[in-house]
Image (tube, rainbow, N blue to C red; front, top):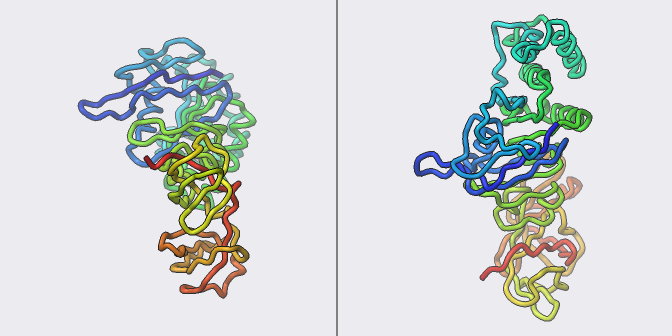
Amino acid sequence: MSEVSLENVTKRFDSTVAVDDVSIDIDDGEVMGIVGPSGCGKTTALRLVAGFETPTDGAIRYDGEDVTHVPPENRNVGLVFQSYALFNNMSVLKNVTFGPKMHGVSKRERRERAEELLELLDIEELADRDPKTLSGGQQQRVGLARALAIEPHILLLDEPMTGLDAKLKQNLRQELGQLLEDLGITTLYVTHDQEQAMSMCDRIAVMNEGRLEQIGTPAEIYEQPANEFVAGFIGTANLLEGTIRDGTLSLGFGEVDAPETTVEEGDVTVLVRPDEIPVGDGPLDVEVTNLFYQGEHVQATAELPDGRELTLRLDRSRKTVGTGDTLSIDIDPSSVHVIQSTE
């Protein structure tokens, strides 16, 4: 296992800045997620850690040692790509033993190591199968076993669940999250899927247009986003403009006690998550303008008295609620997060 650091890393491709002065420290045994929209630089950051790209500026370190210019084959990293990149001319077992073979591990040891991993991942019965005959979930497990077989210092996962159906993603998310926790291997997990990152990672780095917007635990990212981009990308956000005066937050349609913030006076932007707005008993009436049935809950769009819109989360038991209906809501000051000044 290793500690991994990106120190003020910038990567340019001609006039395009793919990664812009990014610094991230990944602790030994930590699962670090990098999330962001397509083109934000997250895969480039992973390729820099792997050694497939060299920074234009900055440094990559493993356990304090500068590996910026060390080729990928000498970094001992395990890689799992979204395509899995399995060798279709080899059996599952030979796919898993290939890496250790290239590292000079004896035939007996690499076979024992592969069989242990296949058993750990509950695919030992697939050892003699051709990879192209496997399902997506089975191929993902084989790809993970192959990456782990070289006993890497760091495991790099690049969108490993892309293309899998929703139910399989949910099952694999739970299994892979538990496996990474049990193994205690330092992991960098790149994904555009915020749910995967929130459920599997110890900390999350949010990137946008090559820049690092925020890094923190899933709870910190969700409950205390650093800016509007993070608030909107992670979860569903109600962003409201307000003013703090004399310990009171005015939101235009009502007032609440001002939450704890470094802003003592002035205009602010605040975040209120839909699941933090009680519906059914409160001093504020809103009009429902749209409803979206989402299985476990109903998401509603509602109009405030001043014309602004809120997103609400309704319990499925409210089946009689329709467009045009009026709902009573409340806003708890403790659920309001001031994310920035509107200056």
